[in-house]
Length: 91
Image 1: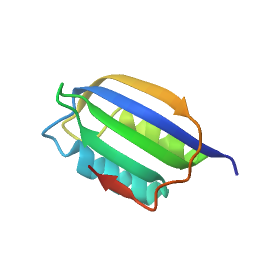
Image 2 (image 1 turned 45 degrees about the horizontal axis):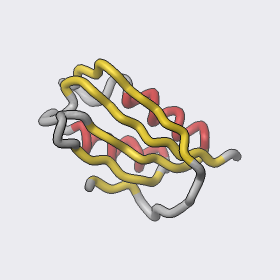
Image 3 (image 1 turned 90 degrees about the vertical axis):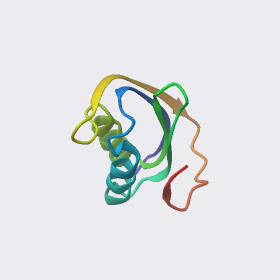
């Protein structure tokens, strides 16, 4: 299986609706590692590492987010694989 790492920036109504907590739960279910955090400008950012198929599913989830989210933009930036995370956490 191929490993993949991406940085994801999610814009829209994505704060105050449990986006981070749900992202953590989805990431753990998919078996990907990394982190998620709110930004000062109302966006949410994530760094995700794992098997390519699982990372792609996480990206797909980010396009809708949890119930109550209204995602308008998802930017995905491929990054070099590092394998530096042991879990998926909220920062």
